[in-house]
Image 1: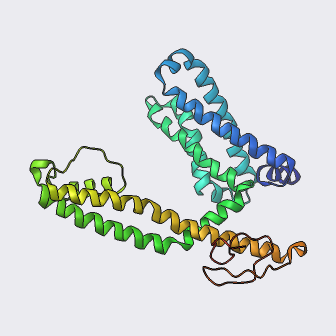
Image 2: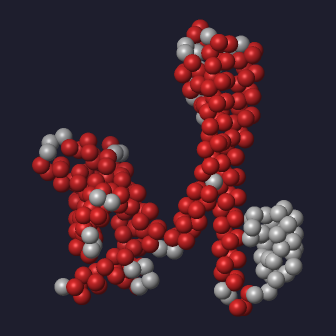
Image 3: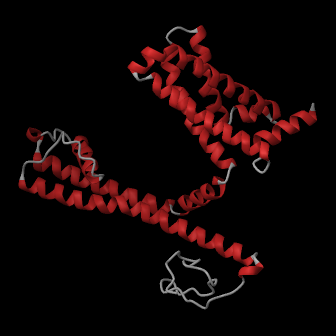
Length: 281
């Protein structure tokens, strides 16, 4: 039994074996097809014609995911730890609605939980070649969290201040009935969404709105730039470590980064390993 459990464990969690890769790819396809089936069920015309076929497909996917869930519990050294883990709860919530529909009337409302299967893609990505890239993204986001928090706090202050001004400038007669609603208008304008449900009519209110629209474009770019710099820095560090361990690439080109003045770049480097800035080769 221990040998069988070990083989199953390697298939489920082993990403470097042919069976493990096949399992991951099969799981990825099953998740995508099951979500597509759930989406088709909400299309009235399609569901009216192919309701029976869609239900059969959903039961097939539920059976597959139930078997996978049971196998993961079977091979876990601490089953309760897996059951109450994030992915364990997602796995359970993704299969539970179909079984509840058999015993409880009106439980079709819970069918929306089946869309949580999309979150299971993160597990597949984490077990395949995406693991390195997802790790870099995670490190970059964690490294830039302080800057992003300061940025969001600044945006919040701008939204509250200008929203308050818009309330006193425009007034209830123009739809700005209270400060929270005016702040909502400010955030909608800053993010360039523009629902159009509230429109300033006074010259000063229109001028402030124009400023918000212009600031909005910068606000969209700032967090992207913050995270982008951290990703480039992380990639540069990773490339530097890889070259250190690769004897075929231990040649330095003598280029000094014009942005941070770091030297010691490798012969085929295009970006600085320290700041991610483009090298002038």
